[in-house]
Amino acid sequence: MDIGKHGDVRLASVEFISVEVTDRTTWTHALFRDDDCVEALVEISSWKVVKQIARLVSELVGQKLVSEDEITALLGIDEALLCADQSLGASVSAIRTGVVLINAERRGLSLTETLGGTIRDSVELYANINRALFTTPRKPEDFAVVADWAVRAGFSTFKCAPFDEAISSDTTTDAAKAGLERVAAVRRVIGPQARLLVDCHGRFSADTAPRIAGELSDFDVAWFEEPVDPTSVPGDLARIASEVDLPVAGGEHVYGSTLFNELVASGATSVIMPDIQYCGGVVDATWAGRQAVADGAGFSLHCPS
Image (tube, rainbow, N blue to C red; front, top):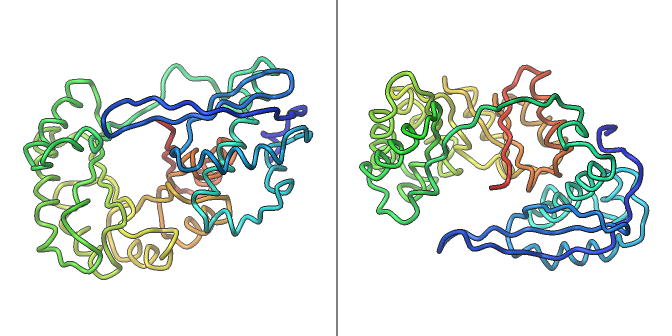
């Protein structure tokens, strides 16, 4: 991809930094350096990939990288393996992003300019209220409290994950009652005009998801995110998308342009969600977004915290 080709980089080292944000949240970063001591700080998915990133970087030290998309070939890693192994995909994604950031720094450009984008004064964000609920009983009233905080913070789009512990893939809509009550509580707080997004974290099946989608329609939900896991059962996701009226979103753990193309082409998603930490890095995320828009699909970029 041409937007990743700028000069050359020779990686020299990587070190790792962790920041404990809360009792349940730790941000982990990789600090990449080239042989001119130009640095790039990249958030990585977890401490679990540290050893793998260190090993891969050691294999790349001293090699000339004209483009970040040369990295997998130099490492001898097939894209199919990256799609199947999330840990490996996250490790390679971090390195690819690091190389792009070093290239940008060497050229005196912002990342936006390096990727061929237009610098904007602002971008639209949504409030993901799930993480703030980790230390609560996750009752409907807890969802309402956190949603109210987001309203007062000025958000107009809200996302919740109401079904995490309420159901499993073989349950009926009756077992999802607690999740639906949480959605109802959020809608009451944010009002009828706000956009409400629901993330299912792959908790359903091809049989139960359409029934849940029907229930969610009563709350004017703007998207139905990953009722099933698109990396393991993309065919089921396509079937669900064909049966429900809600826009289906997904793909935050997908690696590579091939799978994103398949999600859009099969009709499995009308909104793709590349995550920079998993999808192959910032260049692949940019490319996936442009392709989605060109194909008439929506695009929501997941960035590190």
